[in-house]
Image 1 (cartoon, helix red, strand yellow):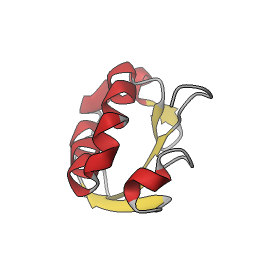
Image 2 (cartoon, helix red, strand yellow):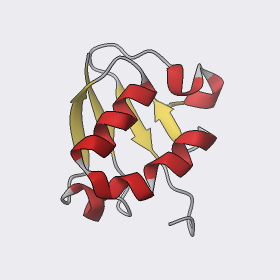
Image 3 (cartoon, one colour):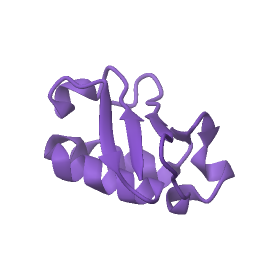
Length: 88
């Protein structure tokens, strides 16, 4: 599925300055894995938030209110990573 991952300002330097990354993924966990594969420097930052779930949203809904990292994705979905102030 073609989706987009929106990165906060704090993570953009670790993703070649990109604010939005298009990916093909079927679940949120799959998308985050592919994001880190594409931009390895993100690996030091994304997993800690992925495990909590409360900082990752699919189309505006926290994934912890859905199926966590197993939340299914469809074409056009957007994943947004939010980093609480002071956590990076």
